[in-house]
View 1 (cartoon, one colour):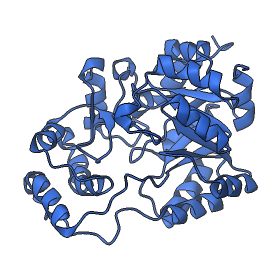
View 2 (tube, helix red, strand yellow; view 1 turned 120 degrees about the vertical axis):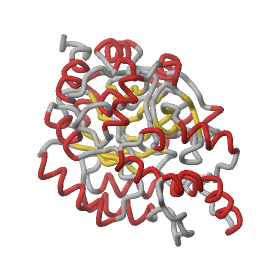
View 3 (tube, one colour; view 1 turned 135 degrees about the horizontal axis):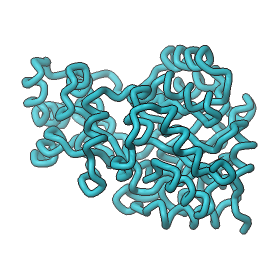
Length: 354
């Protein structure tokens, strides 16, 4: 089967350099997404938890900041999304009570819904007409893919295994992000459990590149020119970078999160369900350790909604020990706090750029 080429992705996306910004859920910023697009890459913006009005406002702000292509990212509904009973909700609140008390917050009441409906979000994305819509946690339906294509929007899916990549190609996506287990944030597996889908970038990317004909974007442990060059040697035609950009002052991460990334070690990262109910990679802190010791972790999205009630206040106060400190294993390579410098370093690893 043919190898994907550099030209495949850049031409497809209408960009100059095949460097894609990771779509941070909760830490995306218009400034950073626009900067990456302006530098010739593909800026991405994560829309986790956004309702339709906020999506439209965000797209407008992105268009005001850049006339170049950008991507909007959505989480697909997944079969591990669970509703809990009143007693289960109360037990989950009780387990987190020490954090609410520490921050002088009233424990939250059970909400009518934990997330905006996917359909509402997707219609807003269609109205926004980004160059690209990317998805995590599954294969978008034929109706979703066709609706995007009808608006001239390219569709990118995300895989953590070869089988997932094949399923995405069969589903009609235009490109696939192959994300190794080294990557920060949530493990977006969907055919098997995240724990049973932990394939490293070095093994995953060439196997996906051999298995599909659409362009492959490598993600996970890529933070400098060496990682970019390695990704292309493995058969990728682009890279997606998260942690190196997350550390920069242009991201929406706060100073405590940036400092945690700056001090992190590759062996110090953990995979945990503590903060969201879904497996995710980050820097362990007091909240993660206490929740794991307690043993009561509600399923997603309940746990994510509950911890967000104190995480938001902790972030406002700069208390890193009570936040979700998402980061990948390449965090020690995230050495610059300026996204322009990060982009330049990454671009130096693209074939023909050095």
